[in-house]
Image 1 (cartoon, rainbow, N blue to C red):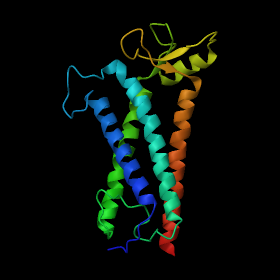
Image 2: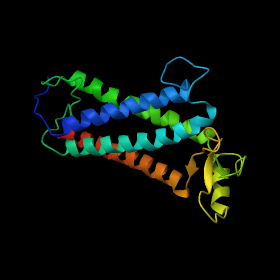
Image 3: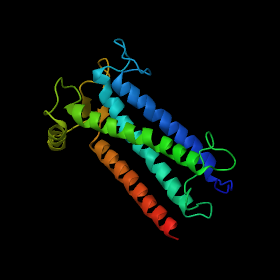
Image 4: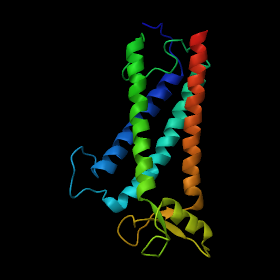
Length: 210
């Protein structure tokens, strides 16, 4: 057992983790079965043309949540609450008043694994399926993830809305607008999440050496 000291980070970690894991699971289900069910549904709410938007927000929100948890874990690791064996906040829904190292590690894995899996699946789906089209066009500007975006960069846009994600997402005339900065934001959040967790891993390695 690890000696327990209540920290102000525990409650934030618990609720943010729970929300992030719940979002990741829903995202995974929508991208695989099309509904909040583990079984395929021919009348699913999310059909193929909707999945590109689910994938986009799966990556966007997932990386934002993972970055927030990374920042929280890194901040916690710099406080006196951090121990060599348990250097992350307590997940209060699973851990008792006195922390068990085994339970703490299982809870930590249970928090991170669904999120990383969700981001990975959403990223692959987004890269494989999304193309960019002019707002009122029936076909993408070009075939492929990169080529359609390069075509969008070269295109003139006299008035908004300019571009949308393709395939058409939803029943016309609805479409999900795409901005030049949309994918840049995704890349920045993904890079931020990776950087924070790498720094955290280095911090933990140094803590265990002391």
